Length: 368
Image 1 (cartoon, one colour):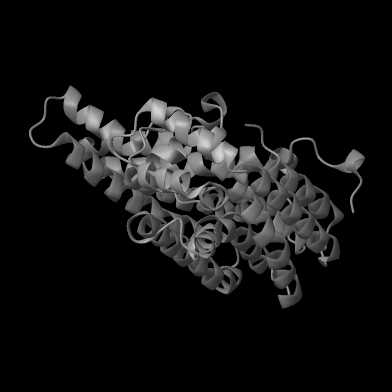
Image 2 (image 1 turned 90 degrees about the vertical axis):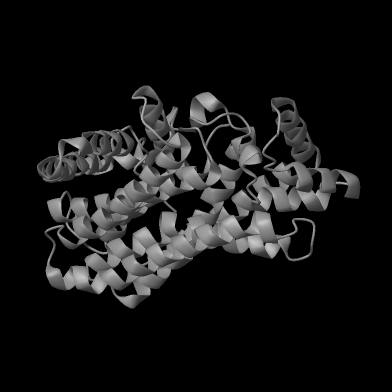
């Protein structure tokens, strides 16, 4: 395993990945802004909202894993083509977040108004007719769809060898399918599932895998590898590394969603409890609480009239259940599993191994 003294201090910034991805997104959005400007000046709020949402300082974790999947497969450093292909993942992520915020009725994203709330506010400020909430929701659906279209456009027109893009496209499409069906299962669980039954843990695990774990780390790595012409052995090794690491990443997010500091997360404290997310953390909490308290958590989680005091009370129930400790233990186990797989992966470049190790730790060891 790579010595800690040789690990990059800021893994997403190694080889200027974040800066180059940001520049690729700016260039792409410049072109799209000009295109929409020719359609109608009324689309200016659309391009402004999308630019703000895309360029407001996201972590760029998915492009980083795509890029280092490429480098680990022998792809050359600092190429414009791989940067643009990796940046396409940020458009997919932005699309998912716009829709996710609407489905979860979230007021904020990264400390700013969510897209549907932004367009609601514009409707209100301009004194327009009709239902402002419906207008905000409609705008968010359409803008999220536009971002999804654009992610395909940027990926296909990255400038990489068309044969390489064609080889990676099925994995790229699979990733998009997986995240959408994972989102659906996440929406289904609060209305159709019972968080106290025997199948709750398994259902939460399925949502975790498909909504987040695969799409955050495993598939971006594999897409990058396939763009570089990686052999099947390396693609499989990236799966053995990326899936447990992606699961650990999401489990950390679940903890942050209940116990996170709003100054760090950009979301109100306990936001996952307000939104009624039936995460693995919640499923473990149900198992660890007495029956009456488990039922209270199940019934009030995501209730439309949930008060701030009740959010604090539900957070206390989750804390007392022992679930946070179980999730922390599972994160440690998954990280060890991922790092063991990385150690065995047949990477073409030692810098890629060191950076992937640092990225793994950055993705899972995040403060509350």
